[in-house]
Each structure stands twice: as structure tokens, then as C-alpha cells.
Length: 262
Image 1 (cartoon, rainbow, N blue to C red):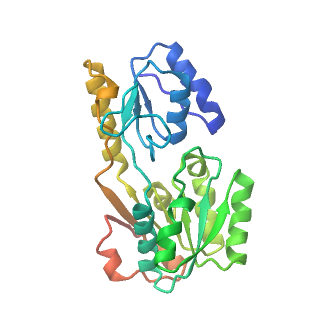
Image 2: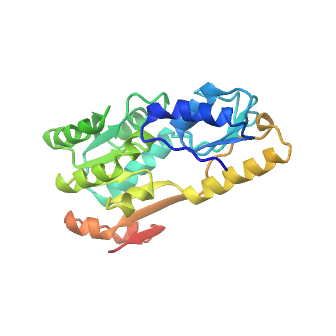
């Protein structure tokens, strides 16, 4: 096993090149930016996706059923339906919710950003959106100031690796500014965030391991259909809810897969 990780997105491409030069038999890329770096580096070494939103839109695969080329794996496609469900869960927690800040990374190559996919579902439920684009760590602080200035009553945070590297800072800022926030990954909630709804991470990487096994046994990645997660977890932090002065409805608590109380 050859492990590589980077403190910033810019470092991913050189690390992908290192793996290719090490003559690995298969590369597992854990997120959208890592997948993009691997795809730009090699067209011959098999690549197994951990998390991606839409590999067809990115041009990485021909179709989910018949990927072609050297890439396959898991694709957690962020659709308006999925984004709308996250928005509905946040409103279930905050019944009077009318304005939501959307913290997102505009430089991601993925066309399906949270900001874009929330447009239609937010109109349907008549919730106004406040765009909070973040290009660097410093802009996270300004984003929360903007959210308060524009009277955002809640926040949704895009689930990409760029923002994930600042997860503790984002969680702390949400607490300081007293903004109830919804995240894509349970890690945020375990670090003190209010709630998350997204794919079950262990299941996704268990399936990625199955892809690796099949490729090492001779399967061609282009012949293996891309899968989408089938298990999604709702995680709620009641300690954070109490600190924000919120009472989470029982109807939402009974739907939770995990409740953090301390």
C-alpha cells in the first residue's frame, strides 16, 4: 500500500504522479479533487473513485453503466433532489426557516455545486438563498459575517474536500455566530456541528475496496459500472442544538441514524 495525502488541493497532482512513477497497480482517489488529479496524470493505471459527484459531467466516464477507459468506482451525484432533501431536513429542524446561507467553493471543477443544485428546490419551498463563496481560509470568516448581515437563519455547507480541510474552523465559526448549520459529512457533527445528512462513508469505501479486488483479479475498470451510495445517514448533535437554544423536533430525532448528546 502506498499512501499519499496533501494539505492543499494544489499538492494532489504531484502526489498522483508519484504513485504512477511507483508503478502501482491501481489508484484509489478519495474525493473529487483527488480523482481529477489522478485522471489528469494517467490514462492507463486503473483509478477507483471513492467520492465524486458526477463523473459523466466531468467527462471522466462515458456513462455510469459502461465507464470505458481506466476509471470506475463510487459516484455520490449531488442532484437537486438530494440537495432539496438536505434543505428540507434543515427546515424540519427550524420550522420558521426563510433564509439560508450556502457556503461553497466556486473554484471546484465539479459543475454540480451545492449552490447550483439548491436553486430549484429552494424556489419550490420558498426559501431565499444567500451565496457565501469561499476561496481561502480567511474568506470563511467573512462568509459568516456576510451570513449574519444578510440575516441568514441557517447555513448549508458544501461537502467538498476544500472546505473539509477547514471543517473545525467552520464548525467553530457557526457556534460563534450562532448559525445552525447543515453539513454533508458526519465528521463535522462529531466536531461540534449541528447536523449532517449524506452518504455513509464506511459503506462507500467498502464498495471501493470491492472494486480494487476485482481489478486486481483481472477485471477492466471500464467494464465495471459506477455505483452510487445506497445508505445515507442523518446525524444530529443535541449538545450543539442546546448551545444554540434549539429544540430539535421529536419527529426528526426518530429519523436520525446517530444522535450525539455529549
